[in-house]
Image (cartoon, rainbow, N blue to C red):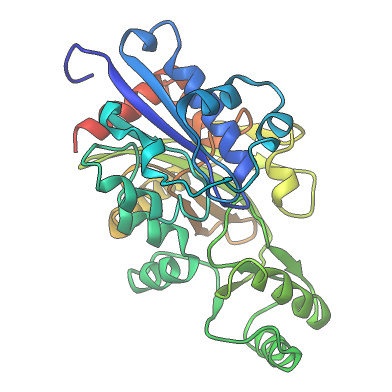
Length: 355
């Protein structure tokens, strides 16, 4: 920790996003870590909750959500429009915050929007900057850049500037997808997280429905070939020097790693993953190289596919604000790498001060 005085950490969570409740769970974990016996000697905490309609709440109201056991019941009473116009800048109280810790997953958070806003406070923040966050969140731009750098990815098609409310457009795109990619395919919103809006499609009819589902979340869509794979993940922290965690594997009983299985207690987490040393080294190298290419720093989780037949590695995606819930892989990876959750959160704060 730089300096001897306690640093005030401003946690921002919730948000107008389909990952609203995941964000609350992440914030609760980080808050608990910041007030641990060791960390409370170094940190003070201010909390700022944003409801689903984008309304900011003050520290006391936000703190009550972090301390409540039942997230749904507590936050439900805050899901209202303000009775009168509220200038959210009055709720931030940024003069008292030394370091920001944004935990807004998905829209307006992971896409770099919150980073841009907080930049005007002239205070450091935990995590990456505007550019890296935006590129990491947008699957189409990320894939185009990484393709140029010859980083291995599964075959894909990108859909942009198409009116998917038109059934004829969806029908023509379904035909194109079948002609250019091997089935099954995964249809994904370009900007979403936690597998929300994603569908696995085995035929034209399912592709048609999957396009509609994805388009409800984002007008830009990515379609990827589905392979017989294992899901591997790697954590990254640092600035000028990026460090990679142990490699972890998620074994799930569902057909694919969807939203329900991501937050299921029935998943089997294997850390370190039972893979060859050379594959582990390759994953860490690609993770660091990809983050550098996209200007992603601070912390991130990089997800990979390991094809069972060929043993080839494919980069899946990069999460610039990965989850900190009790079932989230990012803190588990670093715990296996020698940093428990209290140490990890303190380390991330230190990294933000080294920029």
